Length: 319
Ligand SMILES: [Zn+2]
Image (cartoon, rainbow, N blue to C red; front, top):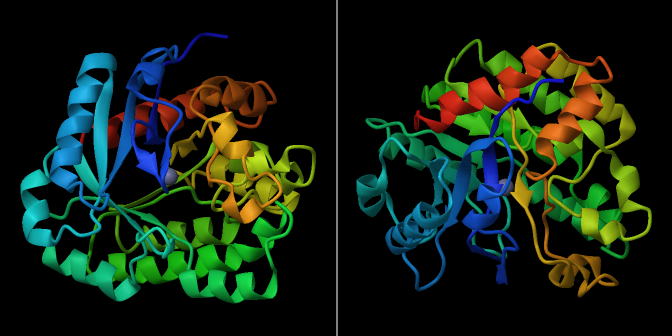
């Protein structure tokens, strides 16, 4: 099979997340065969302004990664006025509808306010859609004793509710929104419908939602597979793949968020403390070729559109 080069629109490298230094940096990206470009997150930290951090990460990347980069900025303290000078062709925005403890949570009202205040420039807004209230309700019912409890605490319903609310805002304000790591078939259908009303809505799913299911959270070292949204049922995985075949997704991106094995294993018996995220970019291309193309689920041409052509266009523009 011919080698295709690829892009990954959703990569966490070279920064700290929830107090952990991520395992991978830009030099690690440079070693991945065929990787042409990435979308990288810059999350504002207390006492470290978004502007400064973006400058430092740009410098870091320039020295070690020759590919193209789009920077996804997450302001925490920074307000619209200070943010506008940071917006350019190679920066867009990322918000979260959950993660209150990490200080990342934004209410739907706040997201709407950002859309209104940025209505002239309209930089693309990436949104992690899991409804915080729903997660809190389900988490109160299911204590986090085993890794698989994560699936019950973060149900598909939470994703569907957040996606629906966000889509309403995107349509109302004709705002370009990109919904990250869609794992629920119902959410993918809602997004597909909303695209008829706002052509600037896009979405991604990740290889792990197409190739793996919640059984990974039951076996040995199950805690290593904790990520959000969690791996879903086999039924949902199958439906998501059918929707992929039907053209519901603009791109496939990994949400690569690798921690060192030591960090991931430290609290293996206390799953609530395990840092949330899994690796993906190193195996992305081959796992999709093996799992989807070689098995006849999709053509190599179609995979090329999903991991090369479409993400290349999105990485080169912030709208
Ligand atoms: Zn992510």
